[in-house]
Amino acid sequence: MTALLALGVSFALTLVIGKFLLEGLRRLHAGQEIRSDGPTWHAAKAGTPTMGGLMFIAGTGVTIAALGLPWQARGMYLHLYLFLFALAFGLIGFVDDWQKVRRHQNEGLTAMQKLVLQLGAAVVFLSLMRYEGFLDNALYLPLLHTAVRIPWILYLIFAAFVIVGTVNAVNITDGVDGLATGVTFVVMVFFTAAGLYGLDSPIHGLFPAALAGGLAAFFIYNRHPAKVFMGDTGSLFLGGAVAALAFAMDMPLILIPVGIVYIGETMSDIVQISYFKYTRRKTGTGKRLLKMAPLHHHLERCGWSEEKLVAVFSAVTAGGCVLAWLAVWVRYGA
Image (cartoon, rainbow, N blue to C red):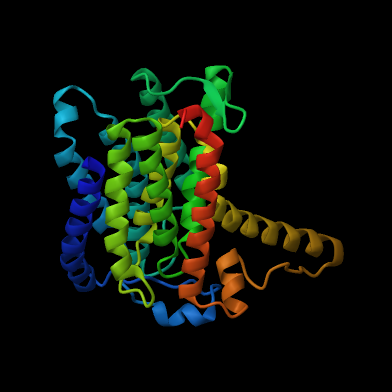
């Protein structure tokens, strides 16, 4: 019941916040700058307000703070830790977005600045979760229903790598109207179910349920043709949320099936760049495997509409989430 209430309250709050935020972003002329080397057909999107992720961040934050009061009164703050961790990444994205808006170009923080800030946030979160007893150095292996204990420092390095990779993979996925929104909504539904019916822990389900509601409301503004983009503010927040929930529920490897779209998008980018550099070194002329990377742009050039991309990628994610649930079914004793 709490999860359904969280979803509904966050949906309503985000919807209302969005109306005021959208107008504020327009007055600030906080329009998206389109990369010159990006898809030419996206040029018409230039000037669309960005940093819209603030609406579902605010809606989610208010919801979990209000509905989580009974737990907070008992000294239980897991839902707030998860939100604050995601918020740390959202703040990194906000700084990046703000610099782009202020400079009127599609370049904000440098790659190294982002990496250092993201690694710092990941290490702080992991250390806090270990201190609070929510995380240890036993790596759960889905399907095998067993865990492998590894030295904490190795686990910390592994976990930080997974978190930063997840955050940036979600960021890459946010390249088509409604895509990151739709895909991550499905992922949040999975984590809500895992918290409520797997762990039998309403406090684990509160944050993903509220975020699912916020994303459902944001989709109304973000679906094609988008009235607002979430920006790095929103996509980095979502990446932080996905990674935080996987570790809080002690199943980081479940990100492989759950995040199949994020992984596919990232790998398409890596393969495209690697193949281009390899062929240029061998022949002097770089060749490309895809018409354009990441994968969603390749499919656009193959004739896929943005609506079709959102529908298909969300369905693929739903399939991955079903496989993920089956992989941890035995662990939950269902």
